[in-house]
Image (cartoon, rainbow, N blue to C red):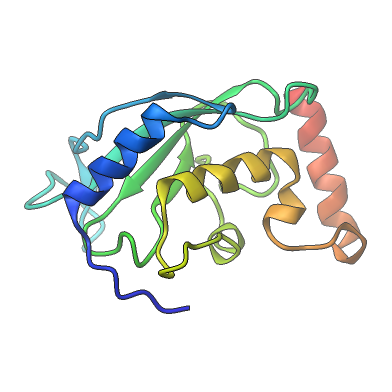
Length: 168
């Protein structure tokens, strides 16, 4: 679904105020938005951000309490870019030690995660929906990618199980 919702920093701040006022039970510590000290430029070199954004939001997300591997608190960074948000998703990266077969080597989510994310009635991304998706990923990563377990490659299921044991 296409989205024509333009970026508005005040809207993002309002969404965060509403989230802080009524956070999901699996979310704690919602930081203030911060501009990172350095970003990767178009040429691949580090540079100081120029202009508006990007903004980082640090949030603590818990998996299911009864889950030995992913029930602990996980620090997650959402990076919002004024050129992309809310038409496109914030970049999600775990800011903690996590062993997971479906993240990259630096704790970043892979493309299937973003493809399966829900959007609101306007077709836009919201912080609350992003956090629901992170929780769903910790609860059932295959479901979060919209893959039925009986259709998942056996190797993927085995690797997920190995990483689950590493986190336990």
